[in-house]
Image (cartoon, rainbow, N blue to C red):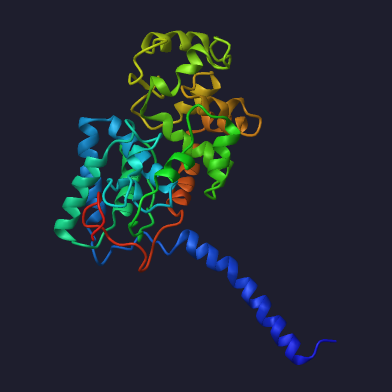
Length: 332
């Protein structure tokens, strides 16, 4: 039998073990809440929404761009606005990464929102939170779902170009590789399929999918999973050489409506990117694609769940980081 001292030590040890997962959860998800600015900047969400809607009326594509900025940010160091930092001093901007260079856009919209917010609530609202709110409002402005955005993030003091190069899924990669990048962030296959539905809006450059049209497997033949008629139309827009920056709608049916046509396109072998179409050709995920294709509300419900989950990835809270006055540079 154990003596009393041994039993006390064992009890303390077990108690410490029980605390470890809680510490990890706190570090990973932080203390965020929808009402974080209710007393300090109650008009922040109205300001963001007004600006986002006005911009999207002029440029509907900006909805997809702002939504993508939140994704690109959260997958590198967590949702901390590191993506927004320009190169300066010891900082090498993430804007020059493979996924972002000549692709990520909407930074000037975030600047505009930040300037307005700083006028009424100086030093209160983080750039990371502005990104999260703008992503929600971009989605709902084109007919997609809305949700309560958890707030209270703080802004990073550094960027990670290598993190952006390594963590953002490539449009030409395999299902397994994309899934591994999601799981490394604490997201699962359901999150992958649901968040990929953001491609129901927006555009992609020809360089992102040209191999599917001409040389998918290095044999000089188009991708066998690509609908031939759809592929023929794409080849008109994207010649074998040149036109790398030509833009094509990710959803050819309802390109500026946030709906479930993205999944309906996949079922018809009309996914634009290889990373999109593999969601339907892979045995692990095709059933989810089929379900979302047949039920828009089911997709919307899961999209909200996955967006909220992604928005909680490793935020800086409390005294970590700072509240940047200018989203493009640290305060000091």
